[in-house]
Length: 421
Image (cartoon, rainbow, N blue to C red; front, side, top):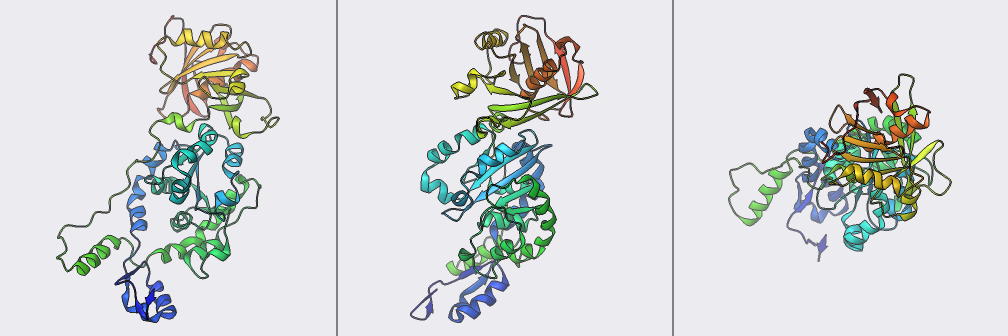
């Protein structure tokens, strides 16, 4: 901070009055250059809070629990200490009950390159992981989160300051300044041991979230004022008159969040389908690529998309799902079944509907009553479970529910089913 006993910076911007006190104690020569201007990033988070429902819809988290995993960079980060964590989370949490999103420090992206990051995480993205780009979307994902799992990085601290139930998968005390706000997060949030299941610890995180009030108060001593104070400081240093207009602090839009829903869905999943006492169906799916051989859930069947890159998984699928806009979808379904003698069901998703054809040639269309309320690929597994329970397809009620979502079942007799119509 000093050169020949004098401050290097004309103005040293701080976010909290407490930091001014600490600076005066540690480097008194620099105390006069300190300016408490607040935290512009935290102000932007606060401005974006009303957009939480829109962020959750974009992330496919409506009716689901969103777990955001944040990793800073270098060896003591989440990725540095537990590179297998994303695979473990995707294997542990049912895909239709949880969404997992990753926020990675920009140095990870720029150190390895964007293409290499996506190459390393390609199986995880196929299994449902949402990877938020470094430029945009991380604040939106953090606001949308139900839980945060992180380390000593700033994103984890912002999550705790927002009151999010927070768990720590890595936290190197030697890298954290004692008494700092990050140190407070480390002393408050529960910590995971390597390899332990995460789901049982979510309740611990929820109980601890109420203790984060002090962390919120230490982020900034002048909330919602950073834009005003920083602009005023800059114009004073430039010796220019400050504009009369209000400095903008816009909420984050949906930039950086998934542009289409298919990116959330596992392209290969083990599905458990159960017929409930009232005739409705329940489906639970687990990412197949994240499970080792022999770890498939009991009484499950394998669902694989037709464009999945894994030849072995495609070859042994019990249910094949077409995800593109096919010109003659019924013929494509028939060919998909003919090319896979072991498959019992083939399906094509279109919007909130799923056209399902059985190996015996029967076809139904199942449509969700509420748009976006359910992944229609689940309907193919629901039909598979219905048949596996010894029922005939014609016995499936025209009005039923899948995973609690009301659906309509239409029995198809026409030759064509084009573009979801």
